[in-house]
Image (cartoon, rainbow, N blue to C red):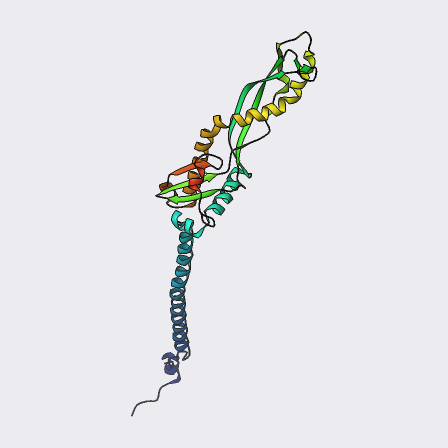
Length: 264
C-alpha cells in the first residue's frame, strides 16, 4: 500500500495544462475571402476579354471608314459629278481668294496718238500732229474661279476648259511718264494734242493689256495645268496617273473639250 503524497511533492511536480482549442471561425473565413478574390479576378478578366474585341472592332471600323473616304478614285468622282465642286473648293482655299493669278507682265509701253484735224467742213485737212508717251506699266492676268470650269475624262486624259483669261486694271507708273512730240505743226496746237494723249493713256493701257494676252497665254496654260495636277494628286489616290490638258474658254478648239450638260 503506497504512502500518500505529501503536499510538498504536489507543489514540486509540474501541473499538466489542457491544450488550447484553436479559433473555429478563422479558416472558413480565410477560404471564403480567397474564393471571393479568385472569383472577382476571373470576372474582371472575363469582362476585359469581352470588351477588347468590341473596342477593337469599333476602332477598326473607324479606320476602315477613314481609309474608304481617303481612297477616292478619279473615275468614280467623275461619275458622281463632284469634280468641279471639289476643284473650286480646293482652289479657293489654296489661293486664298476667288481668283487664280498666274502671270504678271511688266514692261515699258509707248503710247502713240496721231491728232488729225481739218477745216472747211472737212474738205481741207490740216497737218497731223503725232505725240508719244512712254511709261512703265504692270499687267496682272488671272482666271476667275467662280466662272465655269469644265472637266472631261477621255482616253485617260483630263481635259480642262478653263475660263477666259482676264486682267486687272493696268498699273501705270505716272511718275516715270515721258512725252515726246514726234511730228509738229506750226498751224496746230501741240499742247492740245498732248492733253488728249494724257487723257487717253488709261484707255490705251487697257488696249495693250488685251493685246498682251497672247504673250501670257502659254504661261497661263502651264500654270493652270500644274495647278490642276496638284489638286488631283492631293484629292485622289490615283490623281498622279492622269495627264492634264488645258484650253481657255475663248480659245480655238475649246468647245471640243466641253463636257455634256449636267456632267463633268
